[in-house]
Image (cartoon, rainbow, N blue to C red):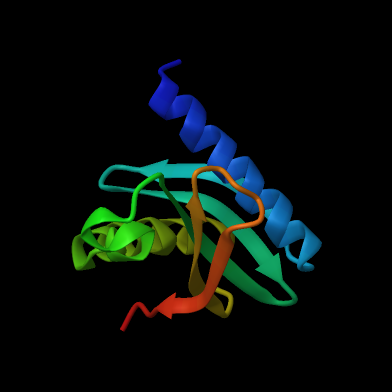
Length: 117
């Protein structure tokens, strides 16, 4: 496993732990389909939450939030549609968890960060 992959895995674990502490349950990790991937899939009550985890060690070019481009959003939406087809339609939303340098004290959770419309 590369250093980049290890950092990505650590970031996803920090995000999963953070969301669990906030009351969500993590039901799946790293769901992949051709053309898209979802880092974490959670439940918040009856709502399915598709979560993109972004780690940035530098704030150049807008930091982690700016890296969630329209193309990235389209890939997440594609994967979410596939997941919902397999598991059943439920109310859903797209959240993002932004981390800076794997520091658990600097986690930003963007609920309803974007929509599939």
